[in-house]
Amino acid sequence: MLDIIINSLWLIFPAYCANVSPVLLKGRRPIDFGRNFVDGRRILGDGKTIRGFLGGTFFGFLAGLILVFAQNFLHIPHLIFGHTYLTAFLLSFGALLGDLIGSFIKRRFNLERGADAPILDQLDFLIISLALLSIVSPIPLSWAIFLLILTPIVHRESNVLGYILKLKKVPW
Ligand code: CTP
Ligand code: MG
Image (tube, rainbow, N blue to C red; front, side, top):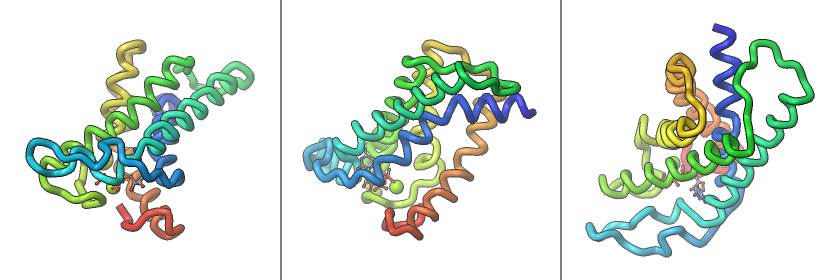
């Protein structure tokens, strides 16, 4: 069990960093440039900005690089998963891409920016980052299941914290 916890947390850390950074970056220009989809609703909405996307990918990648160096210099018991530049990039880019896909789906269901979409809000970034990672590195099923259970719990807590710190308008 300890193996599952340590390896899956080590693995997912860049994606978590990528996912939380956009809220700190205060981007303004929306990725969809304010345009609507064929259904007359916003493609992505004002919550998805260019700065948030690029900055989130950058900070997630940076977090991954720190792990690349850390795993070379420290001996971490139970650790069998090793990051590379590529895993760091795929996880952080995948996290932001999954977040965009999640917003695209929310807009299609006529949910406004910031509306609560349980499961989708918490797992969109996780599923796409794991999917991109799996192109270059197999992920044990037990690690994926552990992350699918853990992520909604962590996500909820971190959003409440962001709300208390006035970084977010809503606690989800
Ligand atoms: N954010 C951003 N660019 C992104 C993703 C997020 O600037 N690509 C910022 C926005 O300020 C956003 C905040 O991070 O409001 C929180 O992100 P999220 O909860 O994903 O967006 P929501 O505002 O809830 O919008 P949506 O309903 O589309 O999820
Ligand atoms: Mg949201």
